[in-house]
Length: 273
Image (cartoon, rainbow, N blue to C red):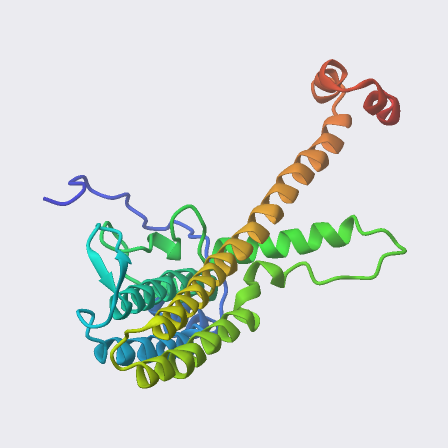
């Protein structure tokens, strides 16, 4: 059974409101709808970094090496097991950044959404919006910042920070990961084939620290982008209330009376109410 069984309205002789779009404009919109319009500029870097990790993990026997402690489950962990766990966690961090950067770049619009997907309808991910919402917030924030810019201040780009990691930092981080895995990690596996001895333990500990720092960098990139969005949203919300107050001041029957009740003395003096 369908969602409804009633007859729809008879639309004979009805006027429909619609947008007037050229065929080229319709094609552009359709490209967004079918997922062909956008690409994630960090995807190639993420694939390269994950490819390097996968290739390295394939050559690691986690049962070999010297026991250096316990893993998260309380099992004995060797030097190679420690290294493999850290690399696997780093790979997971790239997956998390893929979800984030897909959302920022509009690629998430074409992703399947649902309970088993990190993406939601319209390209959202968790509590954060997809490209449509991000672009609207970025545009509004940029406009409001310009509106309230002091004449002595230079004009500034307040649009792109919400998408910051797409403009270089994301690819820089992926290159750092690939370089570490192909370089220092590869050298460790070549120089310490048994994973035993004080030098091997010291080196794998250093590598673990560097890998952990890269994982933190991933988290920081995601958080920084999201914080830029949150700051912009807060700025918009507060200034939207401020602009609505200007309309309230033009309404002596209702708006002004509320402002007389809730306004501070300094505000009422400035507003002249």
